[in-house]
Image (tube, rainbow, N blue to C red):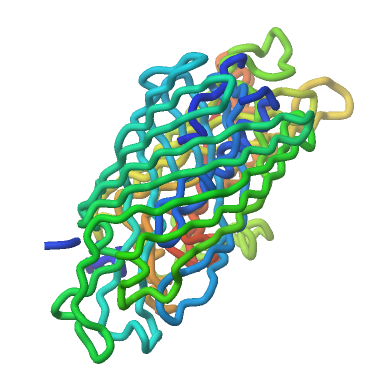
Length: 484
């Protein structure tokens, strides 16, 4: 049997005081805040980067973070209502590599005044005719990933940024240039940043999202090709530092479209707006763990695990002890996970983790890899008569990207009439005990054996960036993990 798949910026410089057509110091938490806002999807009709920003300030290299936001934006297309979307946020601020929610890249140059980054960002802009009679007969316009360069210059008077990107997936095959200015006001826990932007979109990009091809012509909808266009934006971004590591934010943006866009037969809005709010948590530093004991500084671990496809899900079945194997498919998974200590404590440790899983689905679609960077919070229980760890239990959160959609997800989604996605949220729970309690040898000191639930999830079809997928899949694995 062989199954076919059902479907298949950052805020500039971190202040371092710390369609297919033919700044001021806030805290490490503010950095996580940065991830959260940067994760905001591109707004219709523009790839509005400015309103998607949260200040990433004083994030030391090696800082991971997690968060979530809600966006509410105007949709310019005929008959489409305002959209709400959950945005899961993932962040890593490294010396060279960075991941800011839905954008990421490489720092090529960065100092107090200048920054130059190689960037890639997810474009959420799309048109899905669906059941909308006003859009009947149109082809879908899909999201894509844009990549390019971002240059920034900071002065006492604010910050200027130029960002050029082009389509990397052959959807709109166009390019875009965004020029922006912002000025941050720091009033203690509050940071208020008014901003302005001007964005140029070339004719390939505008024609993909707002043009009407000859094959799409219908009564009241003539053929239309807009040509290149400009979009002007004004807004204000705000953030509030709740604690050293926790930040809340709210951003507002207002956009005026070029006449060639507002004149499109597909558009009934001359202006658009967006509100974006949420919270984020910035963890410590993988190079210099926060509040760590000297003897654990620099600690890392490796884990090997192997297991089977589970029938249930991480929340509704597996956590309640139902570890039944899948009924419709028979597949296995093996994984290698590397971890770096971020924060440690007597009862809880926090790790930044990177996992690579090998999926064995030869009977269906061969072997392939999936990858999951995530943050793991690990609790520890002690025996009452010693200071030794009796067991550990933990939960992890991040994202998963698979080279192919796992066959169990394809089967479940096909049965439900739902789509699939290779990019999903990642969850994990684990429980283990010290191996030296089973094997009396110094060779296994600081090693643990136990069970890990590996879970891919679309977060109940609430997240556009995850393809609005309502399902996922689980594997029950047995692991060995050693601290070093």
